[in-house]
Length: 328
Image 1 (tube, helix red, strand yellow):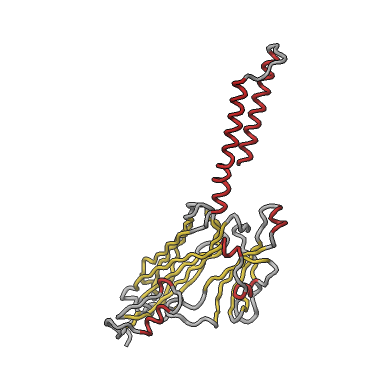
Image 2 (image 1 turned 30 degrees about the vertical axis):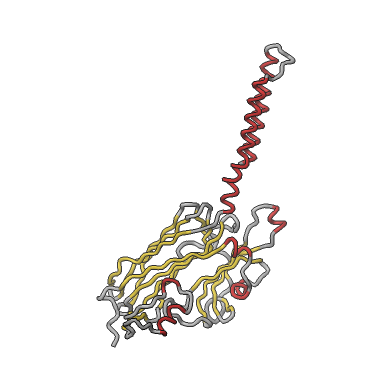
């Protein structure tokens, strides 16, 4: 854009001088020269274009290129009702780009789980050490809590899936919405909980073909996914395209690797969320082992500077006619 401004100003200046000279020749003034006023006007035009160059470059190139990618996620559970012999709930989720640059959604996933509400005998000012430990031992986010009169049973997975296509892009202010229906067994849960996680990156720095399914690792004969350090992972990878010849000469071949962990024997069963599935990602050199590097190699510069994770959660009570019977 900046070069276009300079080129345009130069062209207008040359055209102006050429037109003035042609007019002088046609009137018989063979040796006429541009007047002082014409020179000042042309110089002012060129100066204005040169002054506009840094401002144009700053707003059109620098700011979008250095802006931090950010999204806002909204989750909602509504319309819990009975359908034949099952319960049904509507899961609504919205992802909006709240930053000033385009955002790439490397991968996304929502997890719907259910839990029972059980009575607790720790009512009073004295805190229950076991319940405190369960709520604070790990970084579970708002899903974990301490309640003096009740406790939640370990959660059970009901449904999971993506919020949008992998490697989709959102422009500033653009959003994507999804509304799905999930069924759950009646008489099993008192509380429903949904968590949504999105892995994001700076769209301009991780150029992959949008809506491309990626290259999936071969499925093993015994069990789903690829074995990785005691886990089973569904792995997909996308090669990062170089934006210019300079990048091709100065940067390694890289790939975006997305893993969906579907079996993790190393992870302990938690009270707040199902152990699996969960997302894991890496932006790495293409000569590294995709699956093993997800868990064993330290994060690369691309991960630290261009990629991140955003999440949200929501809960809703199950109506009494669909809730679990009181525990005895």
